[in-house]
Image 1 (cartoon, rainbow, N blue to C red):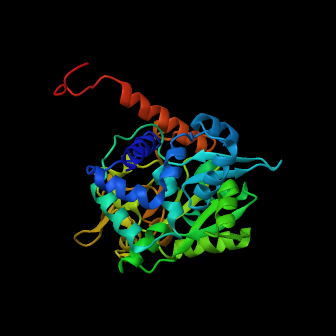
Image 2 (image 1 turned 90 degrees about the horizontal axis):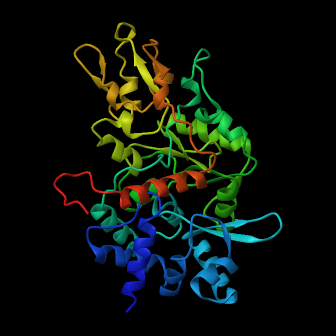
Image 3 (image 1 turned 180 degrees about the vertical axis):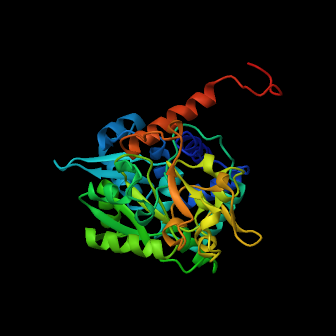
Length: 366
């Protein structure tokens, strides 16, 4: 009965960063019907990546503000859109991509129907060409950064955290989902850090809890001990820092299947390896999330094309055989100022790909 509404919602989400879509439309329909009521789906189509009032969104949707505002607040409560509370009391609303966004914000709504629908969706998800900046960066753990290495503020976790005034921690959606399927690992579940407006939303909805800077530092130390990769939003002012394991994290799992992971991730560093200093202890083999290091004949061998510059191997190398080095300057792209601007750039790049003539000679030209 409401198939066309959900079809339009799927198309709307597909225009947002990262896209949305399955090879099987029935899979899309099942997932969206679990997440959105028909009334919410119809209104969600009218949200953009700009932060707007209920009155503006209602006018675009042809509704009275009194009708739209409760629906917007309910979608915000369900983690389907982002609300922003202004200092003057005004409430704004913003569309969110499916990933990073809606998927992560379902950490408290994981019933069996949602789990099955999500698993079906990700198995049949359409792959889209990468466009614009990445949504996330990989930054090295602090202990792997040596004093002589030039590191910019947005490349080091301490600087990213120091610039924040509101902190929250929430469960990792990837590890929680894996455990609900009785798989996954033993890494800490409550470990994803969120800041500013994102922290406010997590605390307001109960998906996360407010913490202070001391606990932020504890969580980062715990992440290092558990071999977790630091992946903040790809922005100078971060909205979040995910602490990711290679077994449960969708991003890292995807990187492991890339032919050249080093080129598929936004980062500024790589691990230099000096074989003559290797004591063949094997510590780095357990730490590396992308199999850039492997056991050779008598010593560890490195595949530099697989290194994502996380630094996990560097901090535990007793012989000093591994150290971080900066990539060539052309690869050190300065990220956008905020996550919202990152989303806008990705959306513009996706639109350019969508509207440009095909470059595939096997496809007919317009």
